Each structure stands twice: as C-alpha cells, then as structure tokens.
Image (cartoon, rainbow, N blue to C red; front, side, top):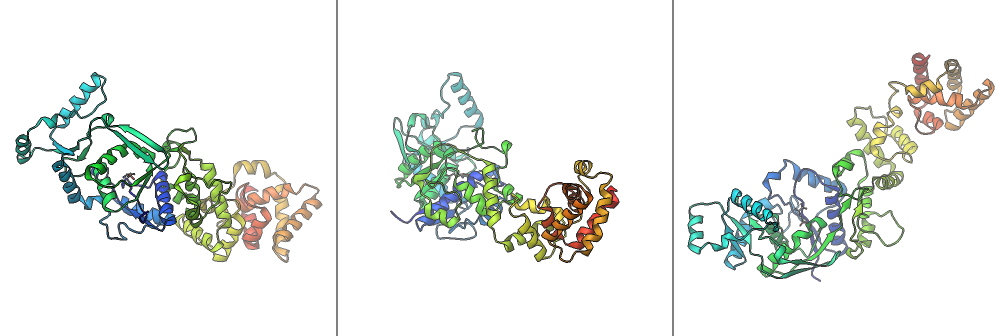
Length: 480
Ligand code: GLU
C-alpha cells in the first residue's frame, strides 16, 4: 500500500460539530497508525455559508483537541493551497477537461426554468432530475451563448444504465443505479465548483488514499466515483462512518444537547476525555476497556472495527469519562485551568497552594472543570447568601447560640485539621446532648452558604481557621 494520506475536509460553518471531531479523530488515528499524513482541507466553496473567523476557530479547536495536522492552512505542505477558495482556477480547468472529453456539458437554464422542470416532474411523480435539455444545443449555439455571456453551469454527464459499485470498508459493497443519479452541477454560474468537483479534484491532487467521512456523504460517493472514472484516476478507499444519534435514536441534533465541540470546551471537558468518548462513537476495541489515551487509540484503532449502525451520543457516558480523567489529571494542570476559569468569572484567584488544596478536595467530586469555578465558589470567596431551604431546615432558634459557643473552641484549637475539627464538633454535640448533625449542618451552611459540597471538616481545614471563624460570625449576623 502506498503511504497513507487522509484528510479532514470541513466546511467552515462557524463551529466544529462533534461529528466533525469524530471524523477528524478517526482520520488522525488512521494516519498515525500507518505512519501516514493527516491533512486539513477547508472546503469553503459555498459562499452563502461563509462565516467570518470560522477557519481560525476550527484550527484552534482541533489544536485544543490535540489533533495536529501534518499539512493544511497555516502549516503548509507541498500539495497546497489547502483552502478551496484559493484553488478556483484548478477546478475550472478540470471542468473544461471533462467537457472536452465528453463527460460533462454546459447548461444555461435559469432558476425559473429549473423550478418549472422540477414542478412538472413532481406532477408526473418522476424523480426530480435534470432533463438534459442542454444536450440538444448545437456546438455553435453553445458558443454563441457563451460568447454573449449567458450564465452557465457545467454538469456531469452521468452514463446511462450502469451500476456504480462502492466497496466501502465500513459498509461493505454498496450499489447505486446510474439512472437514479442526477447530472450533478460541477461548476456553478459564479465560477465556484460544487462540493463534488472540488472534493474529487483535491482528493486526487492531494494524493488522498483513504476517504474517511460521515455516512451522510455516502449518497454523494457514486457521483464521486463517476468523476474519478471520467478523469481516469484511481479510486481512494472509502470508509463511511456511522451516523451519530440522540438517545432517542433520531439524528444527533442541537435540540437535544450540545453538538459544538466549543460547548464542551467551555464547559470544562478535558480534551483527552472528549476524544476518548468520541472514539467510541462507532468504534470499540473489542473488549471491556474504556479508557484510552490518544497514543493508545492510535495503537488500537482499525477501520475494520468501525461498526455500521448509528452510534448514540450518550452525554452521561461522557460525564463519567470526564470525571475519570479529572480524577487522574495532574494537580498543576488542574490548578492552571481552574485559575484561568476563576479569572474569567471575576473570582479572585487564591494562591497556587490553596488552589491545589481545592483540587485535592474536589477532583473526585466534579464532572467538569467549570464546576470547580462556578459550583464551588464558596471555596474561594465568602458566601454571598445562604441557601434558604437549608436555612429553614437546619438553622433553628438555638443554633446561633451553639455556633457562637463553638467559635472560641475553634480559635483555641492547636492544629486546625479535619480530624481535630471533627473531634471538637462531636464532643461539643455530645455535651449539648444533641446529635452531631445539629451542629454539622448549620456549620456547613455558615461556612459555604449551601447544604452540599465536600466533607465539612476537610473543607474547613482547607479554608483555614480565620476564614471559618469569619464566615461563622457573618452567618450569625445574617441568620441570628
Ligand atoms: N466539506 C464536507 C464536510 O463539510 C466534506 C465531506 C467529505 O469529507 O468529503 O463535511
């Protein structure tokens, strides 16, 4: 087999879809596994969908995920440019070659004419398809129209009565009857190629050996195969990845959850966790193992283990994978990430040592990095208020007096450790003749403002004596 060359070829529509990340990941894994090259190609020939800044955003997001491409915009490579809008003259030349060789033709129909044609076909219950009226034009009529500047497109001349066979690595043998294939527009009247022409020309010129992409492109593949044949080029290997589904097995949609990788970035999923989770959307190692680093995925990944059936995007699974990654992430890394998030939220960033304490206390309890920054603000700043329901339940008329008496005991403690704190509080509850909960619950409310969180005594040790005493006094003032 010649050196593997694969590409991720997104259209810059504004954000990277999780399905796009899966395509990029599988291409990356396949390239690395075979010592090949992973290319990024920007397919931006649909100018109506152009979004400012989308390419930069894509590149940033791939970088965040750790999927470094070997050739592409900003990186270079000897098969560039890697942005289709910078290759327009090439597509025109290839379209003209097809016309010369009798595989494509000019058509001059207006939008209204095409509409009317379609309406008529629908009325007759025929599959809407270009009726090839342009083939009736004589060479001199075509010349005259072109000379007078009549807008034209170039259409593929789909051969009659052939079966296009695709041997897909994932889907097996797939057949399409050419009668069902429209004479696809290859070059639009604005001079831009359609996806089909640009995609095939570039895959050929860029030496792509394997086309690994989502199943939604499978129906385009027969057109591509016809183009390869028309040009006399070798076919790449095709592998169409299964659809991503919502838990109700409908096609993955925004309506049922986040689909932009950027959303997961913002929420504080670790890139390795997201990649690990995404790797399993269509592939599995064939055994029970679930946690894989990118290097391990490279080692284990094969297209043969990619399944045909749709893969459900289960966000609970993602949460569980992320929790596992946070639990084992090195503390300095978490400290840095959380520090940045606190700053973004305008929360004063404590010392590195203190942040490390928070990490140690919380890393087994949080699902995302963002939870550190928003869900446990009380570990960084005094509570701005007190959970009303918890106060109603746990702050009784006698509570204030009990906590007030606790303050000098806390002040007098020798070491302000979790164990010592627990002993002091339990002893106090014992001498009051009440259960420890009667002190623990209000104490937690006073110190954190909420009724949830890490172990009270560990939290108090982390906050330190001064902070705890200050907070208890503030709570006494506020709650009585
Ligand atoms: N530009 C297409 C996309 O947005 C590429 C499909 C393909 O890989 O051929 O996904």
